[in-house]
Length: 260
Ligand SMILES: [Ca+2]
Ligand SMILES: [Ca+2]
Image (cartoon, rainbow, N blue to C red):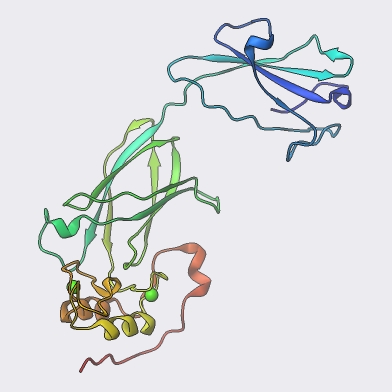
C-alpha cells in the first residue's frame, strides 16, 4: 500500500483490519496485524512511503481491508478500505524426453527434476518446484499466478532446458520441454572433462559395488557402462540453456575421449 495522504509523519503505527463486510467498523476483532516504523522497507515520513502486508485468507470470498493510522494521541478517524479477492491460479502439465532409455512408459523415465518459473525480465525465480516425472516423463505444476514465464527444467545429470510459457488462469495446454541432454555428472550445466572424469572413476560398476557413482549413470539402468559414455560423448562440450549463465560458457575446444 502507498501512503498518499498528508501528515503521515504523525503516524507511528499502521493497523491492518479485515472483514468480509464492506464499510465495516474496525476494532480489536477485525485487527490482522500492525506495521511499525522499524519494519523493513517502510519509510515513515517520506513521500510515497510504502509497506507490504501479506496474508493468506480462506479461499472463495472477497475480503475488505482497512488501514488505520495510529499514534500516541489515538487512532485516525480515516481508515482507507480496499477489497481483495482470490487470484485465479494457473496449472499446466509439462513433459521431458530422457535420453538412452527404453521407450516410455518405463520406470527409468520417472526421475526427480528441478523446475523454476521466472517472470519475463526478472532475475530471481517466482516459483521453484521439485517434481518427479511419471513413467512417461510428465509432471504437473499448480498454484501459479497467470503470466509469462521462463520455464527452466533440469535433472541433476542433464543439461537444463529453458523456454517461455504463457499461462492463463485454470488448466493450460501441455508443454513439451524436449530432450534433457545427459552427461552433466557434476550438475554444473556443462558437459566437460570434469564429467568425463567422474564417469571414468566409476566405469564398469553397478549399484551396490564399492565406488559406484550414480551421477554417471546417465540412462538410469543402475550401472555405468558404454551406454552412459556414449551419452556423455554425444553431448560433450555443450552447455544448458540458461541466458544468465551465458558468460560462463567454457572455451570451445576439441577433446578425444578414450576409454580403455
Ligand atoms: Ca558438468
Ligand atoms: Ca547406465
